[in-house]
Length: 575
Image (cartoon, rainbow, N blue to C red; front, side, top):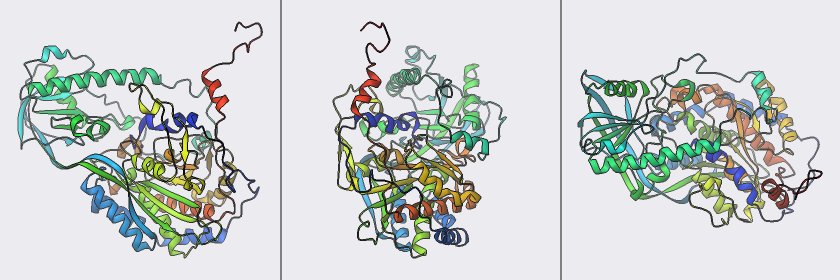
């Protein structure tokens, strides 16, 4: 992830925060809570056919080149996102899928695209500087030149800057650390790491976790300071703002520009009245730090820059691309098995690994099954989402329209939405027929297993499915929850939604939301393997006699006990 956000801690908690609000009774849908066979009926001949088609006749890299190179970055609401929606719709039709179409999930907000961005230090020494426009930045009126001012929000005294900022170029944000790189930037999971994933985390493993409440409090404090600073900059007539790239973890300080650093938070930038009105850009850490150090040392620094961007409308809508292979079994064809990934991206690269990879793998999995002439018992449906990076908007909108929605009770507006309690869940008829949703959104690495999202009944099923795939490296069933992407939208309303475990490669260190996220970082064999695994999961799900088991709804009394400890439980205790 919301990438996403890759979607960060907030979206990662979506399912957890939503579940306590379930207020309806369990539905006895046929096959829903019914008995599951102890032994799965596995068609190894179909496994072999899928492997043959997927490894010897793959189109996944062709899809990747068309999407990443041919279309490029795909910010939700942008012209490139519209091109990606149209291209995927038309390509899925050409593959032979039925009813390929776009579904409108609602208004997103301002459409925007970057045309060109450059910068150079003029004095005390001429030097090219590497930066990109921050998403939703307005344009400068051509090249602008100004003296540089450094403002570290954590220590700045904003009142002392009044009357001193007109025409200046402001470096906004503390200098970033550039630690030595002592670990590889590229890795695959070891057997030991996969074995650890197969265990359920205990309190001991969580002992070193950060204080989430303290983290949120600090973020709110800095956000408030930033709001004050922006008001001051507007009133003073600042020429432009430059913020540092985020550090990228162990990849920090490697010349990579990560453009998701919050310079223009998308949830605010979607509305014109909340947008940042000063042109602003994100600069690589090494160049940003040099400028900041010189200014701190009282060396006058002048920079010239040009931020050329374009707004395409204030009320752009978001769309998901959807297509199907219809089911043929008279009793099961109305049930649906889904696969997907998010089609949108950030803008500094071309969105190849995040999440072009997941999108083209889903397309290739469906192509494989169609090429083999598979006539599934259940309907197979692909959905390629938009708006994931800003908050899972595309998948949330789809789930709301097709499966169910929460009636939210009144809440304190100062409490972030993801931390609020949810009201009762109202479901649709389609909610009863969604069998499972499979998602891929952790880069270009091959599949090593699958997270069950604490669906314990489904683990034994998946274990049987992956046994014939051990030679491809698929060995791990993890009962843990994993967050940050579109399967959460399904899991939050009680539907089986799953994310695959992938080798990390250089996803977090180099390509995630960065200018390095290009076609060159895609790994052909890994993507071919992932498409083969997805196609097998889709086929197996579609052909089972029983629907996949779902997690039971929480018992309301048990949920109350989590927040209201039982009185008198200790001998001799005082009530």
